[in-house]
Amino acid sequence: MVSPVMLVALFFVALLAGFIDALAGGGGLLTVPALLAAGMSPAQALATNKLQACGGSVSASIYFIRRKVVSLSSQKLNILMTFLGSTTGALLVQHVKSDVLRQILPLLVIGIGLYFLLMPKLGEEDRQRRLYGLPFALVAGGCVGFYDGFFGPGAGSFYALAFVTLCGFNLAKSTAHAKVLNATSNLGGLLLFIIGGKVIWGTGFVMMAGQFLGARMGSRLVLSKGQKLIRPMIVIVSAVMSAKLLFDSHGTEILHWLGAA
Image 1: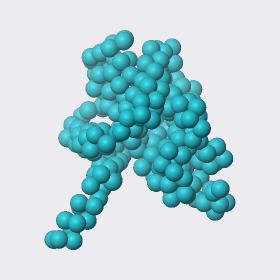
Image 2: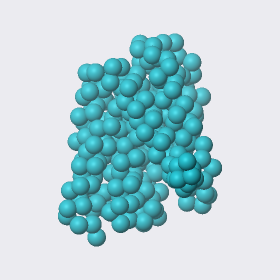
Image 3: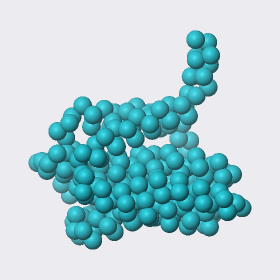
Image 4: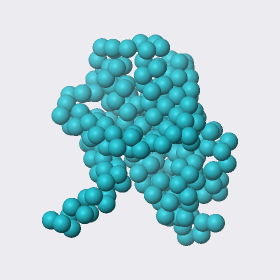
């Protein structure tokens, strides 16, 4: 059982995570460690994190759809491929070790941050589209959805990058569309965790409320501030995420090296 004081703390952690997620992704860097600190096992923390993350991604998606930034009818194939990818990833992760991906991921996230940092004109306005239909749905939906179900950190940034580079959308529009696919992969992954019986429902619903509110605030800034706010947020979140992932993977070696120095 999680204490009332801890529940309040988790609510505000989720609120902040939802705000960050709506802008740049990476909110799981806050929520998963918080759930582990609350005494949950890793499996319970990941499962409950998927539940609460649905609050933020669904909230942001509803906001963008109502503002007519995203048309669901044009995203049906992307949503289908994302759902299939995420459920496949969530099923596979229960039987396969993710150590290799854990080693590679920091390099991928660093790459995203540097890409946005070194290309200041990227995403300023709509550009020519490179992929259409099923090929795009397989790459942006299926592949990133699989990654989100299998591992997860930074999936929102990967979705946004796909819409910027392959669809030619501007950064604000890409972020809006990324939230719809992120919501889909969260729901797909959650379904598999529910079947596995790992979700802590009470804590998850409290955090879901925080995520919902935080994501709504962040979504408004996406449309009002757009490029000026999203780009630096992606760079900052990518740097912090990379540092944490590297420390999680090589923390002992880093501390040993610092001690030796």
